[in-house]
Every structure is written in C-alpha cells, then in structure tokens.
Length: 289
Length: 319
Image (tube, rainbow over all chains, first blue to last red; front, side, top):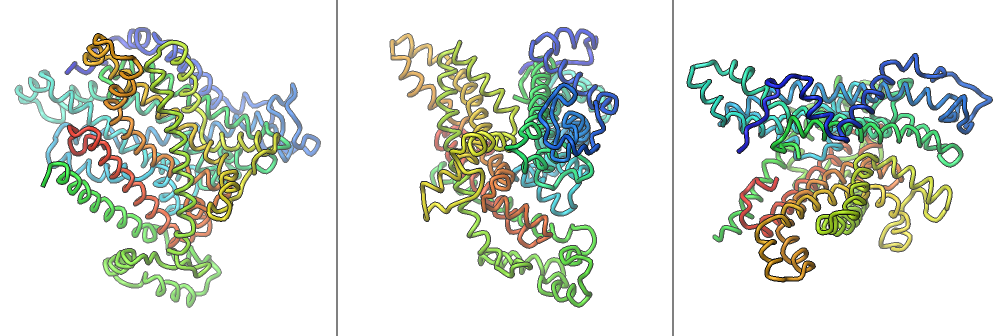
C-alpha cells in the first residue's frame, strides 16, 4: 500500500501551487469560496440596503439597477437579505463542520491507532449513528432540543462527526502500518507523541478533504431545516428562512426564491471543487472517494 | 448450513441490536427534552392537574426501565402510543402515512436508477462527448438542493405552464392517474440528485472494471463491445452500485421529510415535522422509529443483494 502523503514535509506554498491550485476545479473552488467568504465577512459594507427596511412602494418589485435581485413581499431588498442570510447560513455550515471535525478526528485517530476493544468501544456507537438517515437524525435532535440556528449547527455536527471519525480511522489504519510508526514504537516513543507527531499529520489529509466537501452540504441541510421552520428562527434570516418566506409569492415574484437557492448551489459547488483540488494533494489513496 | 444461509442469518441477527439501540434512542427522546416534557407539550397555561394526568397517561411517572419495557413491549404489538391532540392511536396515523412515503421514495429511487445506471454505463463505455454531458448532470445534481429544485419545478410546471398541480395528494387506489400527476414534481425533485449520484458511482465502477485484464481478453477474443459492457462488466460493477443505491435510500427518506412538507404530501416525514411544531412527542417518536427501521431493513436487503451478486463479499464490507 502506498505511503500516505506527508504534508508536513512540503513547504506550504508548494502544497498550494502543485496541489490544490494545480487543478482547474481547485482554482475555481478556491476563487469562488474566497469571494463568498469576503461577502459573508463584509456583509454590512457590501449590502446596498438595510436588509430589514420595509418599503411599501417596492412590494414584489422586479429586479432593477438599484435592486438587482428585486424586492420581497414587504418591499425589502432581496440582494441585501441574501447577503445577510448567507452570512448566517455559512456560519452554521462552517461552525457545524468545525465542531464535527474537532470531535470526530480525535475519536477516529484514537480508535484507529489503538485498535482492539478501544476501536470497538468508539466505533460501534458511531456506526449506530450512521445507521440513521442524516436528515432524520437532525430532525429528531431538533425535536428534542428545540429549533434555532445554533441547534441546527449542533445537529449537523452530530451527523458529520461519525463520517469524519470513520475517514480518520481509515487513514490512521494505513499510517500505523508504516515502518516509521513501527520505528517510533520500537524506540519507545510514547503513544501520545507518536499520535500527535507522526500519525496525525499523515492521517488528517482525507479528513480535511471530507470536511471541506461536507461544509458545502451543511449549507443544504441548514437551508432544509430552516425551510421546515426547525433551523434559524425569525428575525434571524438564513437562506432557508428566505426560501420558506418566498413560497407564498412564488409565481408573482420568483426572484425571491431563485437567488437564495442559487447562492446555496454555488457554495456547494465551490466547496466540492475546492475539496476535489485538495484531494489530489491530501488524499492520494482516495479514502474520501 | 451453507455459507450463504449462514451469512443471511448472521446479518439478520446483526440488525436486531441496531434496532434495539434505535428504539432506546427514540424512547429517550421524550426524556431528553429540556425541562418537563409534559409541560412543554401542553403549554404553560396547563394546570398542574392536567400535567399530572397526561404524565400518568404517558406513564412518565414510572421508573425509566419499566417505561421502556412497557413501551417496547407495546411496539412489538404495533402499539406506538396515542396522539395526545387527536387521541388517535399513533399506529393508525403511521399506517395512513407510511404508504405515501414508501410510494414517493420507491418511485424516486426507481426513476433515479433508470436514469443514473444506463447513463453511467454509457459514459464509462464511450468516453468523450457522453462523459462530458454526464459530468454536467452530476455537477448540477450535487449543487442543486432537492427542495429548491422542487420549488423551481412548481414555478415552471404549476405556476407558468400550469400542467401539473403545485401540491396535494390523491391516494393511488382512488385514482392512479391523478396520484401520478400529484407525485410527478415531488418525485422529479427527489430523484434528480440521486440519479446524478448513482450515475457517478456507476460510471466510476464501470470505468474500473472496463480497465481490467479480463475485459481486455474478452475484447481480444472478438466479443461484441455491447455484450462485454452489459453482460460482463456491468455484472462485476454491480456490487458498489447496489451498495450506493441502498445508502442513498436513506438520503431519500431524509429528503422525503422536506419534500413532503413542500408538496403537502400526507407522508410520515410531514407528520414528523408538524408533530415537532405541535410538540407532539409521542407521534414524533413513532415517525422517527418507523423511518429508522425502514432504513435499517433497506440496508439489510442491500447487503444481502450485494452478497448474492458477489459471494466473495465479506460481512461488513458492503456497509
């Protein structure tokens, strides 16, 4: 079996140039994500209007130069609302995936490194979670704790954590069979040092790839939960809340529905492309395929 | 006992602890609700007498283990408890709703397989223009979320062209044609992404098989390419495709929760969502358990099919 790539050995700039940015998809993904991240960060500066400003003269007004995405049922500027809602949705997507990463990676690493009963004790409950349809699990958790954007982030993290733990466990199993890990063990290096110094840097690549791709899909799950009224609650507006609000005026003002959906689609695509670019560098053995 | 029969038996036995664990999770749902679940269900205007009556009705005043055993025992007899709003047995509600969800998911999966598998095979067998076209479909399938596609389909087919109803449902046995008319848009919305995913898996699996030595040998023997692709390669590429179809069934069941709400289909998914909004926990428990068990059974059947297709498959490899 081929050796897992040692990311720590290469200069970061080389990793970017030769790996992620070498593929066209990776470049596109990176470019779009950078743009979208800037939109989310600088939302108050970029939004042309107050997202909550009601304008009775512009109710369901179609797109024009001053309001490129048109206006909604209360005359509010859809572009400004999309920008602010995007901020909330992206925050939930990134936050939930990071949380899942921070919990899932150590669990997978520990299970894969130690094997035996430790592996069984960690992975069996995780497999149980994977035995449930993801959306059902999210809905069930929200049924218990109650709706809200933080709760939906937590629910998405619970769905993603087992996936990331499984990916890290798989790549850890490859790494621990390598001679350099055996050599470290033979030298009497402590387990914790072996895990953090040798196994983690070589096993984490596929998890980073997987997490990147999952981040895009988290936006879809967040939107679905908010659409059902189980995610972000008014007055907080996420893309899913916008889609739910716009349903009643779908035929009169399709722009209220079209643009939030496009924002989700572009983001999912960008995360996927960027993930594909990362895969060529960080996951050469195809654990995340 | 033959190895195949032993595998089937072992796989069946393995499903039992998963179902038990699932039942424990679902049972605990009501107990994990922050604060007093009965007070939350009834609202803050409920009198202490009302709260204690409902608590006694639900058996929540008894020890946890006794509650679970009674509840699980009831499940074995088809007793999922009672809806505290309509006073209808939850089993009756589920029996009314489950056929809708099953019809929706089965039709969606059938359409996704009928589109995804042949296109995937063609894309692998004829690289070039066909592959490029399917790549566009795959990218769109990944990016476009099912319920937004549903909204756009409603806009086009019900709003602008007015050829299909925007929402609602007619039972299959009452009027099969109307039933299909009402299900067309939800099925299209659910099947689109699944078809793209199945296409990608089929294409990948077929490309791998078509690159192997024995395919080269068959070509050297002069066997027709069509026969090689459909008789030899597809059979060997089938296990991963079937596995993914099984896994994607879970995604469909999850997607059905949103799609049923969007299209006002009276399925289990919509029942779960409305019950959450009403804090009707007993119904939520029943709905979640039924969908979860359905998915576990689909996974079980998938594993058995994969094993039948490829007897070399070791237990667990297909999951």
